[in-house]
Length: 261
Ligand SMILES: [Zn+2]
Image (cartoon, rainbow, N blue to C red):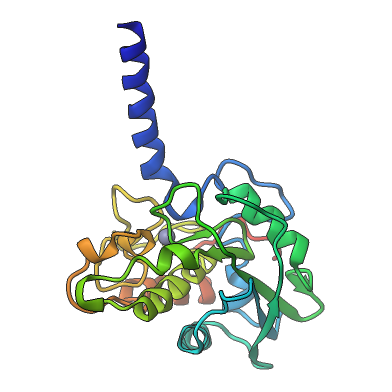
């Protein structure tokens, strides 16, 4: 009897933490100052005061290189919101991660910092990093995670299984959207390092949009996204996301937790 009860409360706990973890893993609990929180380098991207160029470092394991359409789309989305007069470029490296089994947020953070080619803030260059490892996240329904201010990971093995019936959305559509979605978290969306004047954060999914036309819609992080999104998978920031980003950029929205100022 006692056992049953313990089991029941464990289950409730698991449910509760599942709804909070989502894309962020446990990153919101463990925040080494230096690495920051997702959104901690959004102003470094949105403004050009200190950082005039940007590099997206892509560290992938053999067979997990992202599709060109994903990185092209990401470049387009970043160029439309970030102020980088000296340009945004990619740095692709095939790596072997020192890791076996499922990935936790800590594993992602550890391997990210192990493999960073440059410090996130170096001279006038801002560098964000995306890992494309083999294997899955500890919560096997998670397609991607943002673990600190400059590091995210996408789980290709899980993305591979997240396409919908009749391949709509396709694996490519899913990878495109998840790539933009996780980088959207590095940009601070939704309400990670600011409070939007518009009520568009999903009340059950912290840090996500309640609009299923936004790439920041909460279900984009989930392997069963095809059950929640009918029609085309969103891969763009919506009006409210864009208004939040421009408000942060021009100072009309107060931004917290930045790693520089
Ligand atoms: Zn997310």
